[in-house]
Image (cartoon, rainbow, N blue to C red; front, side, top):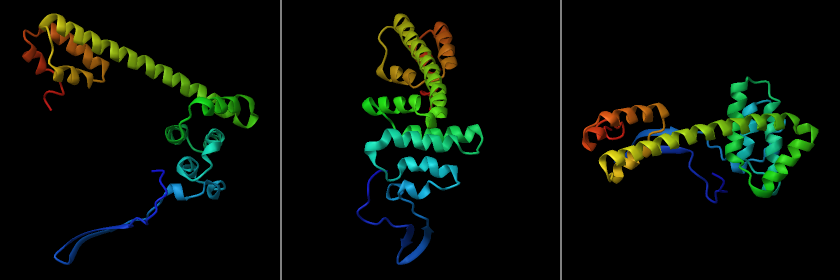
Length: 198
């Protein structure tokens, strides 16, 4: 979390009964927001560059800080899968919007030191477009299944719509659409839903 704890948090957990301790866990407590990112700039551990996203830095400079975190990660000698994981961490915990996003995009397009980031962002944008297309197809199939069910069986119970709404795999929606054609009653169709059987 981003809060600055006012009271120290225990670094252990005990399970006791009748003045006897049965279990005691001790662990190393790390509060990222209490750490200054500058202390880790010379680190050779790529994970430190991602964790900087949760450390203490000037939030007014968030756009540039994000660009710097990403630049450090992309310069690490680790395989692409690990880099992608570290980049995802920064993308998750340093979201930008409005003026900050405009500032970030301007920096990576105009400043030489961020050239590699611009190429990476282009790849991520394409991934986002692809994901959006997949989500659109999934939503279309879900809506079509519900329309066909209403046409065949009339008004649908709310729990059925919720159950169909939880199905995320397009292939499963296809299978249910075909099964709906053979179902002779709504109860028969409900037995086919994976959520209904859980």
